[in-house]
Length: 198
Image 1 (cartoon, rainbow, N blue to C red):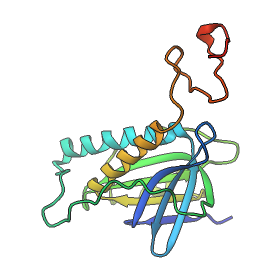
Image 2: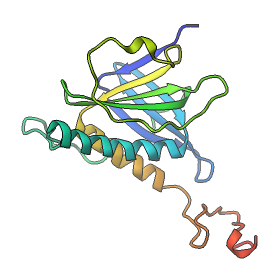
Image 3: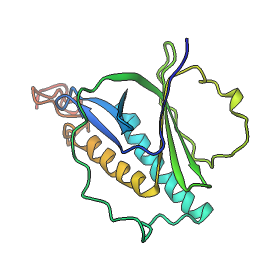
């Protein structure tokens, strides 16, 4: 069976978002460009981890490669934060199993790759930040036959993605002040209260 690579290099829009009410939210990455919209489903923890690892990647790129993470003078200032909902209809292309990150030194861009979960597998792999090399050792890639979404972002667009992803993760149910688990509007069985509703 052939696999699909949905490449947006760069996308017109790339965001993390949700569908559904708090407590029942489904998380998605959505990319738009060239008249196409691609949405892939993932877990909340994957969105949080992606934002964290992207922040580390930008910091490491600035340290190792001297990449200027500020907006170049010829580039227009970004518009207000993208708080718009995901574009409808949200059709899930695949469920993400692995997230990969890289920094392309030649173009000073961040490459994000969301790879479909394999048969019976759904891992949250911590993505390693590394420079993209131009050599051809991609032949031994284990997930070569899996669908994937690949986007290439400027450091500024990456920062905007991180900011929105963190807002999306934080917008869920507030945590219980005692146990830290999400509060359910229908009642919360707190283990710190021996299972009594709060």
